[in-house]
Each structure stands twice: as structure tokens, then as C-alpha cells.
Amino acid sequence: MATRSDAQQLDAADPLAPFRDRFTGDGPDGSWDDGPDRRIYLDGNSLGRLPRATPAALARVVQEEWGQGLVGSWAGWVSQAARVGDALAGGVLGARPGEVLVSDSTSVNLYKLLRAGIDARPGRDVLVCSADDFPTDRYLVAGVAQERGLEVRELASHVDEGLALGDLVAVLDERVAVVVLSLVAYRSGALADLVAVTELAREHGALVLWDLSHAAGAVEVDLSAADLAVGCTYKHLNGGPGAPAFLYVRRELQDGLRQPLQGWFGARDQFDMGPAYEPVDGIERFAVGTPPVLATAAVEVGVALTAEAGIAAVAAKGRALTDLLVALADERLPQLRLASPRDAARRGAHVSLEHPQAWQLTQALVDRGVVPDFRTPDRVRFGTAPLYTRFVDVWDAVERLAEIVDADAHLGYPAERSRVT
Ligand SMILES: *Cc1c(COP(=O)(O)O)cnc(C)c1O
Image 1: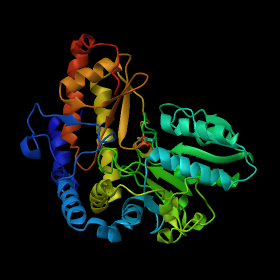
Image 2: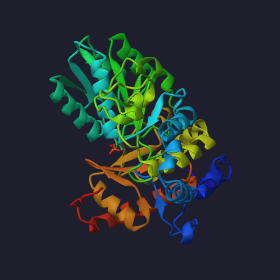
Image 3: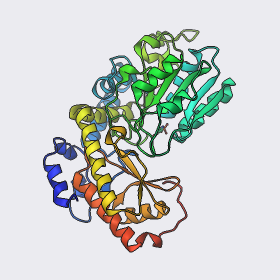
Image 4: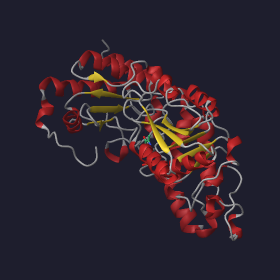
């Protein structure tokens, strides 16, 4: 049985430990409170913490570039989305320069690339998505299918174990245009096999549009094997609330794809203000309108931190943190069932535990300073953030949960859910 001092030893040997001080803690002035009653934030996969460098980076853009430079600052701002995209491509996603653009929200990027992918597969009339994917992905697939008169086939992937290749084989044929899948499942953390799935779809002539929202900044991603992808920057990449998302289009496909939102930021010779839309060459054709410059400056800081730490080290620590959580839950929480893959190689950086009173447990945990997420129907989801979650945080969080369960303390909380969970 792993003791608290075992967890402390893991922290002492952790090469990423110094990165915690690069983030704002919960103590006064953003310092880290390491006391026994401290908050333990296990929701960095929903909203990542604030990097210490972000306020100054934003203040510089506000005061110097906006305040002093005014419209002249567009000289630099106009290439910001592609520049931060390149940092993300090379530092985090295993893509090449010119393949990633920071833009819009994940939902809007899904729409753009889904429509572009469908048009690149004329004559095909089926979209595939997972019945268990994040709602926005399923809703967008359904909406585009309706708009274009296509059929949707839902993959019956396993809620806890994720996608098995056999499930995909069962729905692929020559009618399928695009398959939309999350690389890391939002509920269970199950990690799909990007290379094998993309290959399988290609054999049937279909494109895979990957959603990397819970993967980017948490696991090693090799986009060199992929065709299309989108993802969030406010989760593991610590870009801040509502930070713009990213999209990836394989270089060889870019000039053959057109997206439906024909805005001036995606146009050739943008400032010629020509009569008709003609997409510019390269990744910028997937841009739409004036980009969120301030928010993208925060994304740049978050991405740089993950790139500096190295995604291989980040992913390895994510596996070690979740392994510890799973081992401790086995020992201390027999009333909860692991609702994630047991093999760390098949997970992202979060795990879920199932319990019929998961919502009440979540409330009791929050009251005791542990912040997880509740996820329907009956899961408590624990997100580890390798850049700032310590092994001892995992140990203490499991201990606090065990105390709640052992005392039935959660039964004093309402079973009725609130609006945001
Ligand atoms: C978080 C998340 C999103 C969020 O999309 P937004 O447009 O940023 O709201 C989309 N897809 C998945 C899989 C997610 O986990």
C-alpha cells in the first residue's frame, strides 16, 4: 500500500516539480498553500490554472500594443494565430509548421473542418461519431448531417474502455465521408489509437476529424499520422477561460479543402478588399474573422510552458499520477468502481470513479477542498495536471474521499444537481 511518504518521495524525484511554481496557487498573492486544509484542484482538464507569466503578458499586449501601438500593432497581431499555432504544432502536437492555427472555439472549428471534410469526399453520405462523445461533437455532427442531408452512424464505443477497432470496422464502408472522434474520451479518459484508427478510415476512403480537447497538453500526440483535428487550449494548455481553440489540417490536404465560413481573415490578399472570396493558400484559409488577440496572448504563454516541460515528460507524469490514484482507490475506496481503462497506456491524464451517489460525493469533496468534476450519469472525474498536481495531492484527495465515504458524509448533500457541474 502506497503511504503518504511514498507519494512525497515520488514528488521529490519528479523532474517536473519545479513547474508548479510557474502557476498561481491558492494562497495569498497566488503563493502555494501546502497546509493540510489546502484546496486540491483536480479539474485542470476543465479549466487549467493561471500561469504566473500570463498577467504580465496580457498587460503588455494591453498597455503597449493596444494602448500605445493602437492600429499599428496589427502588423504583429495579424500573424499571431499562425505563430501560436506553430508553437503548438512543434511543441505539443507533433505537427509541422503551417499545419496548426489558433482560432474560434472548438465547436466552430469542428463545424468548419467537418464541412470541409464532407466536401472533400463527394458522393459519400454518412458521418460517423461516437454515441459517447462530448455533446458539442455529437450535436455538430447531427446539425451538419441535417444541413447536408446526410446519415449519422453512431459508434457503440464502450463508456469506460473507449473505442475498440472492431467497433469502427463495423460502421465503415464506402459511404462514410468523415469520422469524428475524441482522442481522449472526456468521461473515462480512454485513449484511442490515433494511428490505427486513421489508417483504418483511410482504407475505406474516409477522413478522421480528431477532437484533441482532453489530449492536447496531456498525452503525446503524433499528428503527422492524422488528417484533421481540433481541440481546446483552456484545459491542459492553461490558456484561460474561453481561450480560442486550435485546428490542424495536414499540409498536403490544405489547398484541396474549403471551409464554409468565408470570412475576410481566410481570404487571399485580405487587404485588397476584393469583390469575391478566394481562400488564401495554407492553414490561414481556415481562419474566419478578426482574432481574439488578448486571449491568444494567454494561449501563447500556456503552450510555451507545456513545450518547455516536454510533452513526453508531461504524459509520463500523467500516467504515474493516475496510476497512483487508481491504486489508492482500489485499496481505500472499494465502494467506488473504476470507470476508466486500468492500463495507463490506454488513458489520458484523468480517471473517473463510478458511484450511485457520485453527485453527492462531488459536493462533499468540494466542501472539503477537493475539486473534481461530476460527470453524468454517476461518475466523479479526477483530472491530474502534470505541470502542477503533486503525488501527495492525489494521496490526500483519495484520503479525504475515503473519509467521506466511510462516514456516509455525502448523504447530507442534495441529490438534485445544479446548473454547472
Ligand atoms: C471541452 C470540449 C469541447 C469544448 O468545446 P467549446 O467549443 O470550447 O465549448 C469540445 N469537445 C470536447 C471533446 C471537449 O472535451
